[in-house]
Amino acid sequence: MVAASFVEQKRENLVSSPSVDPLLRRHQLQFSNKDGEKIDVEAVIQDTLPSGSQLGTVIGIHGAPGSHKDFKYIVPLLQEKGIRFIGVNMPGFGLTPGMI
Image 1 (cartoon, rainbow, N blue to C red):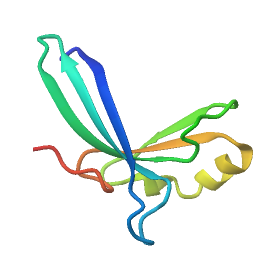
Image 2: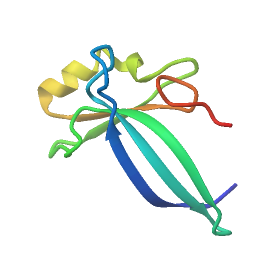
Image 3: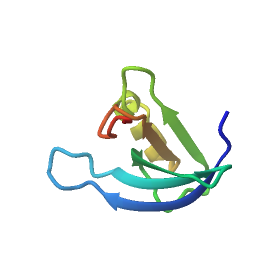
C-alpha cells in the first residue's frame, strides 16, 4: 500500500461545447507518496454545487464500465433538495483519461 498525501489541485470547467455537461469539471491533482515522489492525476467529476451545501454531499463512484451518467436519475432529486452531488469518473471512464 502506498501512503499518499494531497499536494495540489487545479480545477477548470469543461464547458467547451453544448454537448458537454456544464456541471463537469476537470481536476488536475498532485499527490506525494511517502518517499516524496509526486504523482499527477487528472480526474473529471460532476459537481452540482461546487460551493458546497449546508445539507450535505453525496459522492457517487460508478462501476466498470460506467461514468457520472450512471446517477442521472438521482441527481435531479438531490438538486431539488439542495444536496450536493459529486460524481467521480474513474481513469479511462467518462471524460477522465486512462492511466498510462
